[in-house]
Length: 257
Image: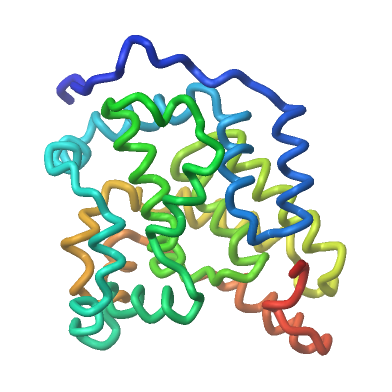
């Protein structure tokens, strides 16, 4: 394997490990799970060198080098829904556009949330910034590819999946605390902690989604892409939804603030 070549600005400092700061922002996130800004605060407070290590791993692959060479900026591509709707039924692109419209989301909206707190590392234009943006901009695409919804349990399980793919104490902490909070109100039969563990296992078994050519997979059938990336179905997640409904609850209302 050839050595990874990329540019990291020498003035870039490793984010300090700040668990108390992470805890404060976690309390705000638990109070309002839609307050996405808190996620970025928590990750910055806990992840340390993990993003740099993950980027180095990315750049040691031929596909990683190719993606950096393209330097595609995904938000305007993903927010242009007209060509996505023109793609075949069941395709990644069309499914993504339908999902984002149904949920009232946009890639640009996630960009705005990430930039609210003005993290100093975002002021440095180097290759690590591009990679951090790519991690952010593929989050909602990962919902589509993994099958996890935007309910509180789906978000927590997806973060478990994400942690297995990329590491980072911040992401793991949010997944753990999310599952812990959901378990307080969900029926025992939903096996919330097992759902989070399944997400972690599925993330470990799958090929790294970050290395996929997002533009290339958009017109392809979702099930074909899942098979190619070895993304297993979230069986326990769906069973948890069944158990929650059997208890007379709406899975999308559990732990909703």
